[in-house]
Image (cartoon, rainbow, N blue to C red; front, side, top):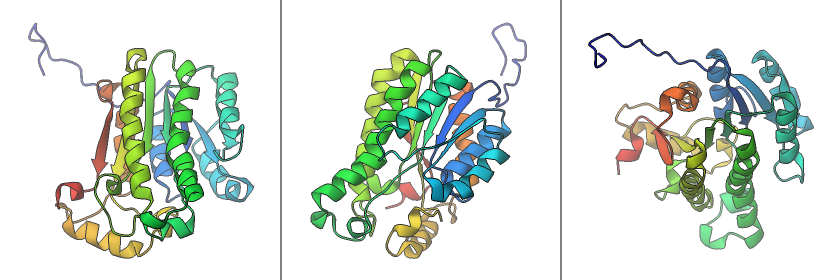
Length: 266
């Protein structure tokens, strides 16, 4: 692209050096959050990484250490004070934050495998709390640390927009998450904080394995996608790294699909 004076503009490459990011949601090396973390690290970002509990630490810590993360801390959003402790550790170590990747979701098995009509009050509240409200909490805690602006990103799914067989209670929950993304973007935009949702197609992750007849969902999605193939965690990672970079400084308040175009096919 030529500038107004006819000179060739310099090519701006993806560069996350100097950026500090928090990654919530790595369970193992197949996690979407790990795909994102790996690409952000490769482009130079410094990362804080959480693990769910003592049982999961043995899987997550080696991955986090492999990504040179200086902050590796537990975070179960259901436990009072743990999410706050994560942000306090970041404040003490870095004093600021540039991006947050929120990639967690949960529903009781009986609610996930049953009809939305039959979902219990407590089960619905739990799914909403872990999968949606925790993102709002992240935004509130990140806001004072994003003094120079930043990016908040969560992970959704097409089932939040259209009915997907066997996705059940997570459909309404993801719909709420996408709506929350828009409202957060509106409220935090004046401070230079962007808010986005990624919507990959079905991926073989530990979390997805809890969905009833998930293999059928994978096959159907691949068959109808214009590309005839599904995305993987590396596709999610490279796109997310771009979105948290300054190259995407005008992108906010939307859900971005990484599904081979499956969402455009009825």
